[in-house]
Image 1: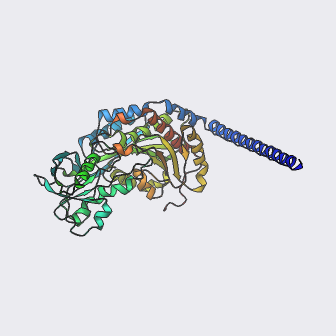
Image 2: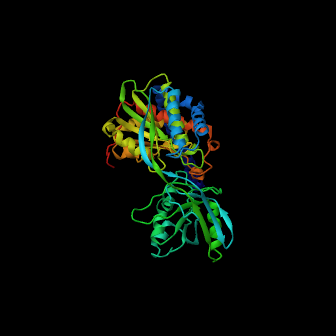
Image 3: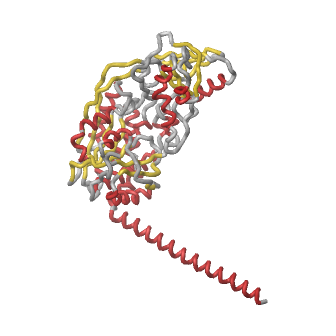
Length: 484
């Protein structure tokens, strides 16, 4: 009997103790939640004008209207084409129409490339027409095309490791599939086939190179994009085929029969051309010489209308600056929106901008570029000094209602800000959901209908918070180790 009583007493004690612990934990959680709510309320109250702008941005369709205008009135904007010039004129007029304080353009000169005829077909063992596109700056085939047997490699690395004459007299086919990730990290490993495939194939004696498109879709649409020839290596034609057509070739190769491809490309180099970086500013109230830089690249490839890459970035950042300008309080620092020229063919406009503004680098405080489509922003990262985390914390609190979390201080710039970042400017990265970005990237499917207006507005709201907080920060945002 005594043992049973002791057991019951011990059980009761444990239950009571557990209840006390749970009560204490609940009280602590309630305290933590209360503190968080108070902190949020404090931030929302202290920065109410920015919170109001953020909430207005969520309801605004301005970015979508700007994007509709660009894709309808200009369309594809490949560098050096008549549409390039039309896009520059559009950008100047749109900045002025939106009421930016200063609007101007800065020249950017580069070599051009002209797309012409492009066809590909399997001659044997089973005749099929393929969907192909020339890669940027590919040389043309002979007028009658190139007809030769395919030699397949799983990756650019396999091609490079193959014997010296492994592709002699043949057309190299690189079949690596790009992997799909929310942050787009599958692009880097796959894109090497596009950028260096032609020269590596030429070293092995190939007549031409054909790659599986650098994309994650299953549509019968090829992805174009830039490639480079290695100096001192014979130039051979380079093309991409759609993912379904790459699968088709792989199915043929499984039958252990020679596969013969005919490729015909008319694309060729063009004359030098001068385009422009187009710039609009909302002038700061008390520190106008200090600039927060946002923007996107104005050019696009020529297959679609450039809605995702990078019309969306252009529209998001123009709309964000416009909404800030119309707010109840003008920020201290200037917000500069740059529509960069010719990003697609090698950051040409970005490099020209960095060179032109090298003497004013100290006044380029920080920046962020939108160039990963129109998916919702889910996180952001910084690259600033430890002394600037107070400003980062303000951004983080004001972005929480947008569903955006702060990641870390290992962020980097967008492509067009990388030359300024390399010179020491601090930067922020507003991470968009790119799960389907590479379904559309550099294809004829890059069109306005793929854009979700609500997701676009959420991007604008995030850029409103970033640019407003940075422009009004008590401290001048810097990097602690500008050379890293």
